[in-house]
Length: 385
Image (tube, rainbow, N blue to C red):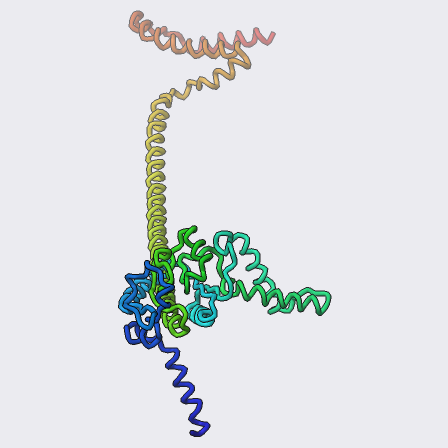
């Protein structure tokens, strides 16, 4: 085989390894999921999942495994699709690599080294250590680590390494998970106890020596084989990935619906504002017209009243009352004399017709005009003397 063909073969093998095996009896049989523990170490509660016995070891019924695994996948996908998180736990040597790899691919949280007591029931105490790990990693990444000596720097790097060992898979965990996936519930008794106390659903691989009643979704299978653990973990990781995709799609749909609703509300507000402005303008016009009408109605009676109150035209000889009042204030005697003067012609004018009617016209005296002239001259001369 030439060297040029070697990378191609390696690539093909890698692709085959990464391809997820179908969920059927053949793939489970090839992975060795059906092998159980020796019959003397069995748990009677696992009887319904046991197919038979061979070489003093129990054989697991793979048809029950397929059914249980499908139900577990549907449950996990539903929880993750609703926005939940799954914590994958497997601290035994056979499960550490598979748990870390599949959790990294699915973007899930995991614990593959050691389950610290109170990881969930006392999460408020664990959280400061996680924050310390995040702070130190950020400081090392930015080169802002404050240390006096090289020894202190080494101590900080060892602290980061140790914290990563126990909390590396839950650095992004800010709240308790909604479901746990556990490999070998006999070894992870602390995790099972804490989850049951907090009423968190458990999906687990149970072997013939386990109690399936302690978990919500029991997947009967071999929990000591790397291939068996890897296969079942791959299917759980696939369910997690599908749930995350569904959650993302639902979130995008919700955001699109909210954006559309906001656009509709904005359009409705704009239409309402336009109608309100139109009503305000119409009301202003009506008010202006009503004010003008009231002003016109008010002006008409005033004009009529002024016309009625205007005095009749007096004769030219008569003086206005105001003028008489002024003169009365200045010189009362003169006003009285003027009044008398004005009354006399009026009295004479009234009496004249009566006298004219009573007395006939006197006969004209025939006196010579020269005699009158002589008498006038005589009077003038006498007055001059």
